Length: 237
Image (cartoon, rainbow, N blue to C red; front, top):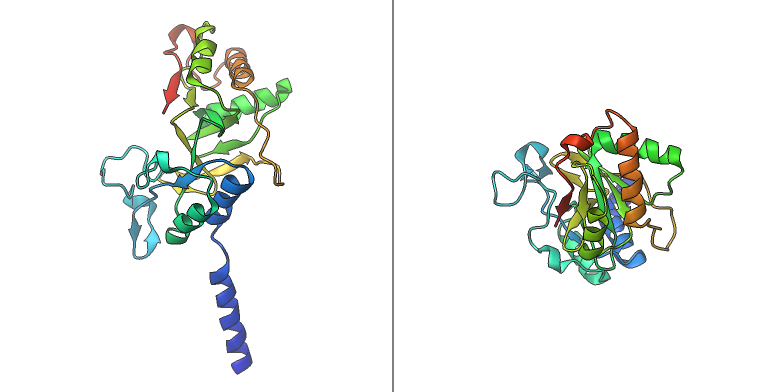
């Protein structure tokens, strides 16, 4: 009996010693890929557990993106410093991972989930090479190489039409990364980065937007607003 109890104690100790998935993922982003990250606000906790039904842990009772945004620290605190990342997720092991987009970090182009799934299928058929794709129950985000607001402005100005469902996550913006959980559900990789120490390859935003516009025009009922009633693109900061 002593031997069995001792083995159980050792197993419990090993489980406690394992890093949480969020810490492991945050360290990979910050140290291996050099993507600046910080912990998101997360969801309210009840009885020691995260309760999706309780909403955002921030003070705003009407928060429209529960759990899916920075709060304390703010977005400017995002870092690639290993010690800081370890300290943050040691204090809050289940905190969502927030990527500060722009600068030297990836940017992103996102669509509603249904439109994103259809667009991805069309892009695959077109032979378009894509980088990592982040998926939530409500939106899919295609990571792209860093771009400036000036570059994005020139790109959109040259277009006759851009689907109104597109959102752009650039300089000063942020994006939730797996394996975070927010008020809308789990954040996951639809297209995961290839394993290895090198930072994932990222396509240029021009190539992705061109392909998405072409896919939207050529695919009726693709989940985007038709050209004649489009409202233009959205920037997310």
